[in-house]
Length: 109
Image (cartoon, rainbow, N blue to C red; front, top):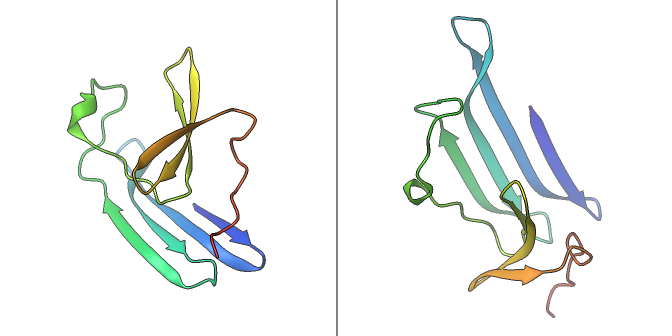
């Protein structure tokens, strides 16, 4: 599966999910690649991830992993009851409101 984002005719991101079939002939995620592009369409960052273990509905300790977002990424934290909205800044996640979520800031000159 592939998901791309474009802005003003230039690529912004490209996310490709890779699957194989398990013994039950069910698609199983095996990895993904994420490419992030600058305002000019130049590749800024590329990440490749390989899934080494996949467990469905298993117990996960939140301290076992960390998720890193590129500056400007809009993030929703949803614990099943409450939704909180953030924008990734250089110094960490900055809270925002639901009405501001998804609105992009103009780049600094």
